[in-house]
Amino acid sequence: MAKSILALENLVISYGGIEAVKGVSLSVNEGELISLIGSNGAGKTTTLKAIAGLLKPKSGKIFFQDSLSSGHCHELVQRGMALVPEGRGVFSRMTVIENLQMGAYLRKDDQIAEDMEKMFQYFPRIKERAGQLAGTLSGGEQQMLAIARALMSQPTLLLLDEPTMGLSPIMVETIFDVIRQVSKQGMTILLVEQNAKVALTISDRAYVMESGEMTMEGTGEDLGKDPRIQEAYLGA
Ligand SMILES: Nc1ncnc2c1ncn2[C@@H]1O[C@H](COP(=O)(O)OP(=O)(O)OP(=O)(O)O)[C@@H](O)[C@H]1O
Ligand SMILES: [Mg+2]
Image 1 (spheres, helix red, strand yellow):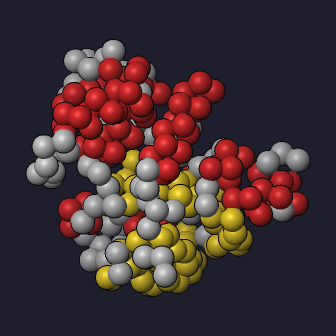
Image 2 (cartoon, protein in one colour):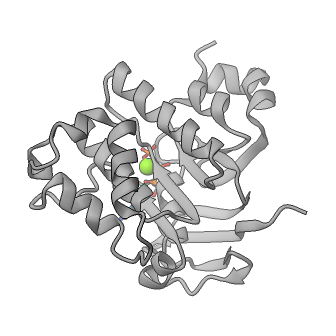
């Protein structure tokens, strides 16, 4: 049996009187790369925020590594959850290096310097800017740094919210390449992505969210072939 890292059961989340997530269930097992796709306003970010303890669900359950989630962001981080939020998730007044060190601040091992080198191999662009303040990096560079910082924490579960949004094709390719590599090395990842085509290609399984509900689930391959997905997300 695969080990469960994350399970959502009937999650309901509302903003005031408006239900943004209406009873969503989802599971992520150890080592899986799972995509969550869906159009704007479907409730993807809301779902990720609840998983990370940034929003309190109205009802439903969230299990993280087999125990009921406390819903406290700090505790979840300590237990190995890392969220790369939508948009820029860096400390802008710290340098690139300092951002990466912050990512590793809970680690007690002696591999931190090696891992930093690894990040620079993944993202040579940020190596060239190691001493620069993160706030002065381009949007794409900040996004790469945000991902690298999350990886520096060696998370048990990596949550990525639209990591390629608004980036040039080359940067998109670099980021997907790194996601693929860390996934191959065994990292457990839940990826929210607008770029359904690539997301489905690299994912083990994917979920489709529409207006707050989970409407489809399947292997990336099967969903990619589904006419409904092709019409709605793949421009066929
Ligand atoms: N802070 C908020 N207050 C009120 N409503 C909100 C808030 N944040 C999100 N919503 C609403 O909840 C719904 C889901 O939003 P959410 O950001 O989760 O969607 P999404 O799937 O991430 O969309 P996108 O692809 O555009 O990022 C939307 O209708 C949105 O308007
Ligand atoms: Mg979103």
